[in-house]
Length: 112
Image (tube, rainbow, N blue to C red; front, top):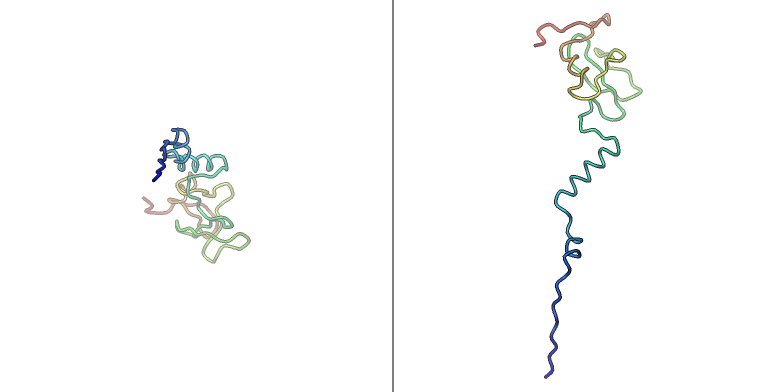
């Protein structure tokens, strides 16, 4: 009876590494893609196709679809003072200020 033996030849180190992803490669690629495409890690005030509005006389806010008027009791933010991201300068400002029924910007009482 004739038997044949198989010779085991280990794969080369470089071939073995090529089949395994480097640790941390996925997060690094995701971060690079975000930077290259202009994505931000900041949370937007409203989603795409929407704009923010504020509640008249209080610090409430909402998002309205582009092309639609603000609902009753709400108004657009004054030009140049629109919050774009949660925690940005205007988002922080409007936590303590509002617009009254005449359109005047006023500080909200007890807005500590």
